[in-house]
Length: 120
Image 1 (cartoon, helix red, strand yellow):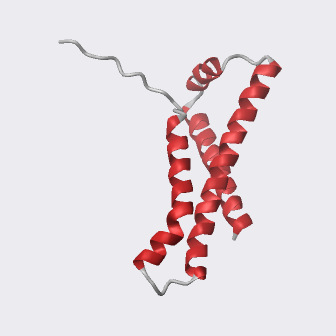
Image 2 (tube, helix red, strand yellow):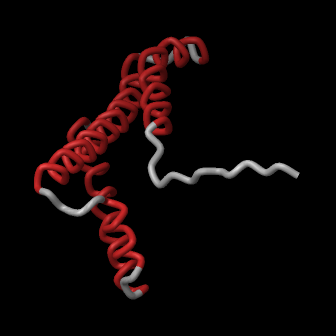
């Protein structure tokens, strides 16, 4: 029996690109779809959903830009590779790991809320 080894990746770059392209398509063809589903839909009805989509697109762009800037600065500062940092992270106590994940999630949620507030 021949089994293939599945490579697990922490962050695959294809997934955010697919989501970004899907959001761009929804943003482009959203008014046409809304007008097709409901002839009485006004431009205000369409604009609300488009602003929410635009905030999600902005959030993805800010997240991708932040990741790119982190990688550039990480290499230029001469810090150890990211996989060494991850292995050291796994040696932390469990409550340190949970606290770090909660803080990271809170910062991402704050950034997403800021993108939504900036557009609405």
